[in-house]
Length: 92
Image (cartoon, rainbow, N blue to C red; front, top):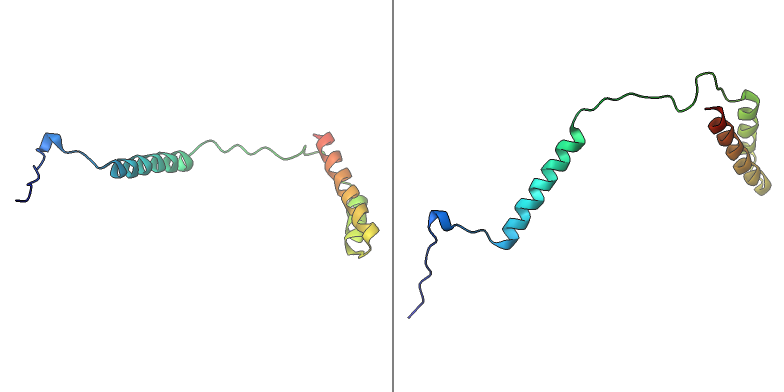
């Protein structure tokens, strides 16, 4: 004879462990989404000081190096860009 399964009462309703994991994952995803979209103060500070401007001659020199196809120019481009970035950081 087939064994009959007992139906749980309303107060005994239990979830399958995988269903519980899905519910917890959905709740965490919901909390993360709310935290991501929560409006915050958006004070934007300039990346560098307003009085600090890059040297136009240096910018033109880098532009000329970029147009040059020589391998030595590639090394000089890296050095020039590094120098410009370092100058901007020191200007803050």
